[in-house]
Length: 152
Image (tube, rainbow, N blue to C red):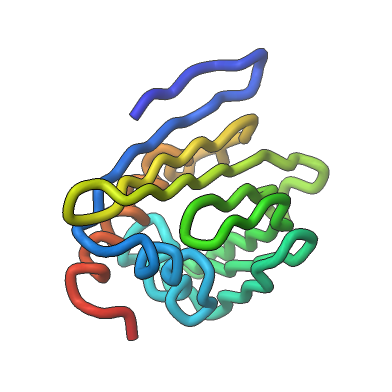
């Protein structure tokens, strides 16, 4: 993973290998029920709302609540959808109106599994909260654990 500053807004790259077929990783990113199982910084967050309409122009929303009861309401629109290969989506927090960043997820078969390459560009971190780097790593750790079993 590499964190770099582009202008005044950071960019983050995260790479992971999952020992499952790309179709399973794709489902985890695109099925709302599956998304709700792993898309959070760590286990102290609950995800009472996870929605997705995976098509160009469609959108997603994930509401995360931390142990203190603070809400982190995230939504975006899909700009590019290539099944089992690529998702490009905007990313915006409800409490940061007008601050939209871009997330690109590329999946490719690799040996006995799937290589995931994520790029998050132009985001702003919350003050006194886990950073996007911590959040993505925590979420992808959870995804890896879930993918070792089966998504519910």
